[in-house]
Image 1 (cartoon, one colour):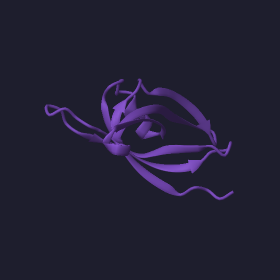
Image 2 (image 1 turned 90 degrees about the vertical axis):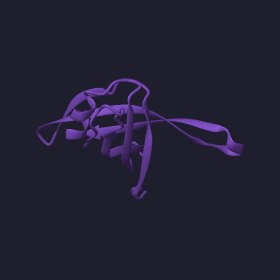
Image 3 (image 1 turned 120 degrees about the vertical axis):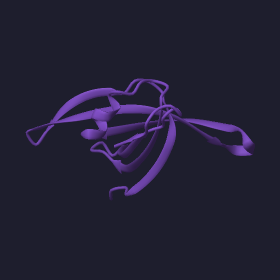
Image 4 (image 1 turned 30 degrees about the horizontal axis):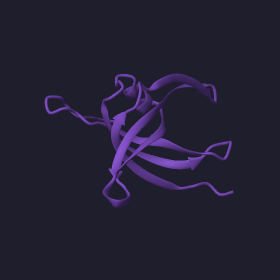
Length: 108
């Protein structure tokens, strides 16, 4: 089966605190963060459609997420692909903190 090569953008709030771990890949320790994002859009017949999306971030993007908590807003550009179990997964390519008006924006 061929690899899926699609990307997508999501804006929403963190459904829970990101789960942070460290994995060893090729002898190197790499930070990993798995997080769930709650996003809404206008669905069928104008009804609001709420979706929860699970995303994985690696390296500096994962390190950036360790400072974020449930309920905070983020914008994510992610690449969709199949993992070793042939399950669809989303890997963050860019994570942006959606700041309150009094805060500075940060992008990783």
